[in-house]
Length: 239
Ligand SMILES: [Zn+2]
Image 1 (cartoon, rainbow, N blue to C red):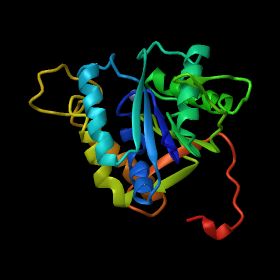
Image 2 (image 1 turned 135 degrees about the horizontal axis):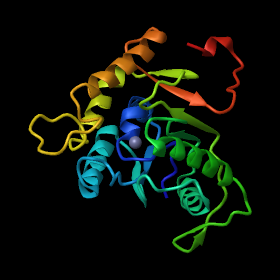
Image 3 (image 1 turned 60 degrees about the vertical axis):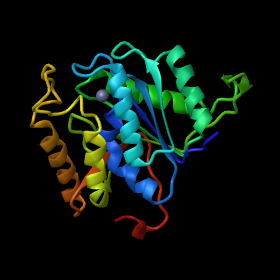
Image 4 (image 1 turned 120 degrees about the horizontal axis):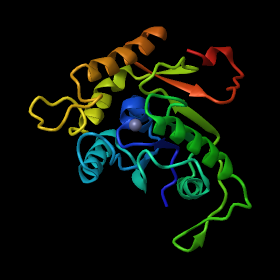
């Protein structure tokens, strides 16, 4: 089974691409193994179908060079941070044994994002508890707790705790977002307009990335929040 260095947990297919695909691409380029688990198929989205969005997610996975991508098929909008969903997510965390988890924004316009964030945080902690027993394909799984959970920032502005420089991976980020053709601005589309299909949405994503990049004196950045403190032992480690 593939052990991942980084597992990205996302409520909807395209959350990871919009929130942290530059950071993903940068770590893949450094030789790390990165995977995404999408919690739902985004079936409540205004545009597209679950089948189309799965194809788009596969296309984006190729662009980002992911080592794994899977979809848990939770119910879009209705999934909860409860026992049943925690158990399914713990199975995935124990399967891939990531050192770092990147999870949804802690609070956002879409209620699934904050829910996905707390579900991921709880499942990462619970995954380390020996007395929670899970199995995969009939084989019992060992406990595993990721060292860090960082939350990417999505629609609503959140003050980041750190910003990752994605300048060299901006083009890859855009390409991975555009893989979700059904969701974004397409003048030839016959589907109803949505919040993210307006021509203003992608320039907004760019301006957010430029704002974060500007704050660390680079061109483009992605911001993250942390639920604990990060320790350092060399002041020169900070950029
Ligand atoms: Zn979403």
